[in-house]
Length: 135
Image 1 (cartoon, rainbow, N blue to C red):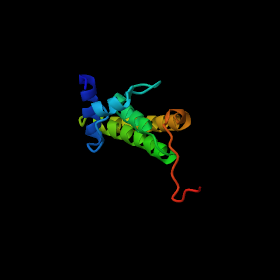
Image 2 (cartoon, rainbow, N blue to C red):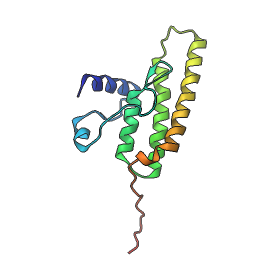
Image 3 (cartoon, rainbow, N blue to C red):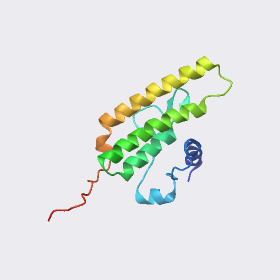
Image 4 (cartoon, rainbow, N blue to C red):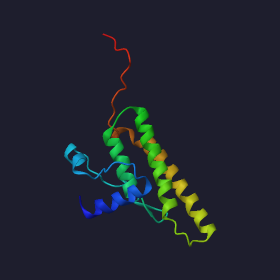
């Protein structure tokens, strides 16, 4: 794991320590290559979101059903909002903190809408199995 990947992993685990190590050699051997925020900024409202985008890419690479895709996109939005909440210095004036949070929520909604609209072709889809398979 490179130093950049280690730094990104620490940032990701600061948001949610239960998330898997997406930069591990295990996933690299299986073909996962994190690439940050594809075709969009890596920083929003002075907050570095590359690890969040990498995790979203991981969920897309893992694939699943359309419901799994929706969950991955919601997770992207959740982690983006959480990342800005954790990145705001405590010494900021309250009005500035509120302004930054509002801006980040707007950006998170925009990202969410964009991945819902244009992300489908990048998601590894697997059809949901029915309980009763017809012969």
